Image 1 (cartoon, rainbow, N blue to C red):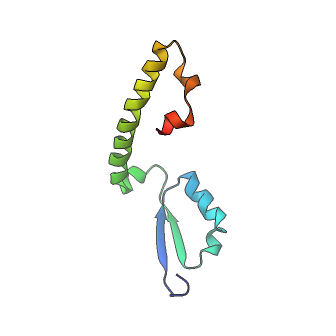
Image 2 (tube, one colour):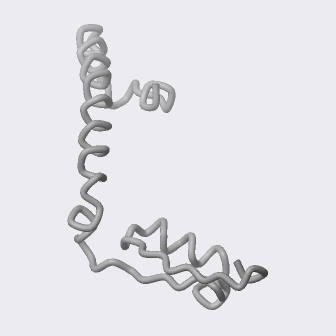
Length: 91
């Protein structure tokens, strides 16, 4: 961006990972050609309505296998909260 003399205005919500990412690249001062403007807290769903649909769809597709897993574990007499692995959670 700097070599091409281009400037960017980047709108970001207040998700802590975004703030950490800015810190990891050296903070706001290190981004000479990028200006970051933070959205007000709790407004992401108003500014990014597409997120609502994507998140709802993800939850729907995630919950179905999780409920199946919980039922299978309970039928075996096990606690699904204690038997779940990372592979189960993302698979």
